[in-house]
Length: 339
Image 1 (cartoon, rainbow, N blue to C red):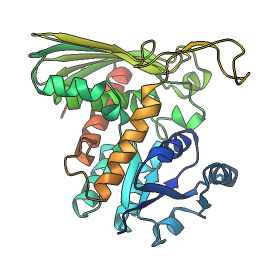
Image 2: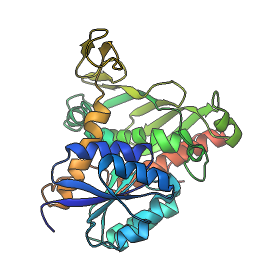
Image 3: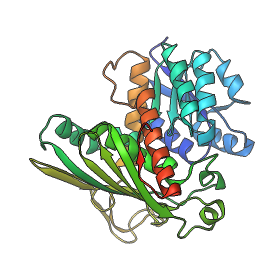
Image 4: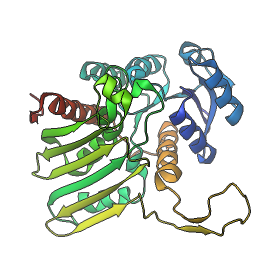
């Protein structure tokens, strides 16, 4: 392989554009092609980012000039597309979740175990400041034994009906809270039991499909730590706040209101369409997505041998936790992991 990783995008929706934007700042990696069943979407994406439009996934996998694929398709397609890409000898970056069933996740793990390709999953919070610093403090014991954590996770109202469908997107727990499912397992270790409450409070499509648009999930870890997480699609904004409390200290972050930098722009200055007043450049979009893609490219090139990205096994564990949370909500009971 050369010193440039050539990546093809599978999917041309909102999240594909987020990754395409991130690649503008990724060294040693370049998007070269994209494909989507909606021809207009792939053509628009290609025009905006200088890509070639491929007919379908099969043509991308058969292309010797494609080193890696970035899977940004609906959740139900992740497992089949990941396995196909691995079997075609491509490196794979796949958006979360790994799949919507444990059986499909196990197929991905088996394919990954039989391959020497880099397989990485899209849990960008691991790369979003100040999460890496928090992880170092927790794993280094600076906060002592972790007692509890609390999080509020704000996602945007979905752009398509498939997000709500339990068989296609999985709903707000499997699609959005899975980010924090991965995070609390990474920070605090395996889960023993989970309970969840919630429902379709606001969004008509959620009500029609019997899929929650808000939920609160409580996880008890094997360590004794408790993670309490609220997730919503109806807050009207994105991002999260997160507090962690230990026997020797605590830490908290609020990426809704308090990013690393603040910008003030006078009304009427420069671009008349730009927002005036105070704004807070978003760390997740600026650093998280770019960071995970840079990490992926460097792993493919052999420049990074200590991956912090979610492995296939960790992605499966996050899925298992979220499936248990959804089952707890549906069955109105505490669910024991592994049972």
